[in-house]
Amino acid sequence: MIIDPGKLNNQERYKLMIGSIVPRPIAWVSTMDREGRLNLAPFSYFTAVCPEPMTLVFCPGWSSVRGQRKDTWINIEQTGEFVVNITNEETKEAMNLSATEFAHGVNEFEWAGVTPVPGTVVRVPRVAEAPIAFECKLQQIVVVSDQPGGGAAVFGEVQAIHVRDDVYADGRILLEALRPIGRLAGATYAHINDTFEIPRVPPPQP
Image (cartoon, rainbow, N blue to C red; front, side):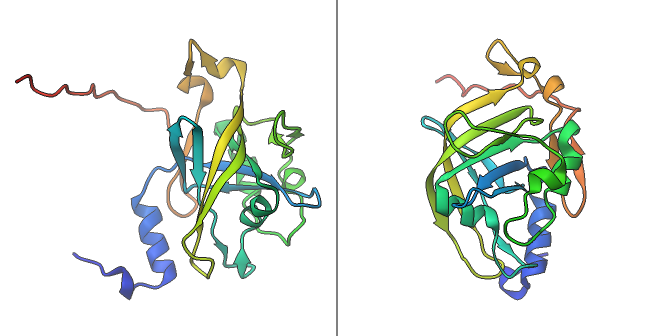
């Protein structure tokens, strides 16, 4: 089967992508607008970019419910700061609540029942209940499309990292303590508790 994406509508392309590119990590992004109003929302188009400088990227899109760019995108343009909180088994219900789309200005921290903690470098608060949080300053926004179905890549340079004590030891994140989850399609998520190792194969010697 060969599928021409040009012959699919936005929803069909979206479903094909989120059903194929799995599991996806979740950036639980906290932002603040120029008036100081808080916003919290999850994004599963998210990954690391590089360690030097330490950079993360996530991709906010267009709100089909409200017919405009998502608040997270707008807020970061206004302030140049955000926090990527890492969600896990303990915070999954609150994370899901924060995905509810409200009118601009509604505080999703309050709606989801989580605690904002002031940043140490950025003005945007992190989620106290998150096991890991990355305070970021905006590096750049690459806009692919700001129309319905479109989105942008938001690059943030990490300024400070908050890690719960039991999650970090000897320079490594402890998976069994972190208890991460992954995003699949629709309302489906994955537990990340069944892992295996495949050692890297060295190149043949001449």
